[in-house]
Image (tube, rainbow, N blue to C red; front, side, top):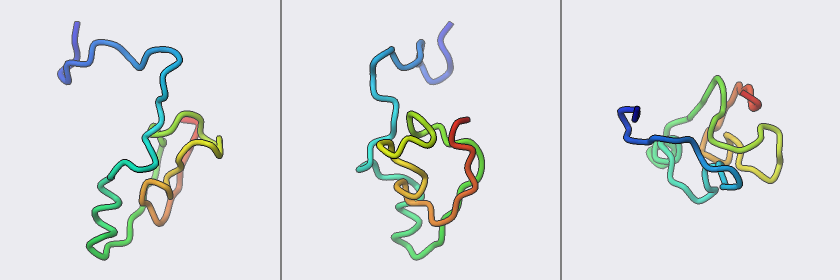
Length: 71
């Protein structure tokens, strides 16, 4: 049964699951307009929590974070 988004399966094994470092995020857009940005909670936009080779919340435009990176 498909979800409302039309996505019928999760990311296939062996594929990159991280948000790319060059992706434009809402946080980046807000920073461009002079806002401070923050996020709290689970970070499901990278592939491994504390893996330094993966983008972290600050790389995604957030100035302040309180994150459980491992989910």
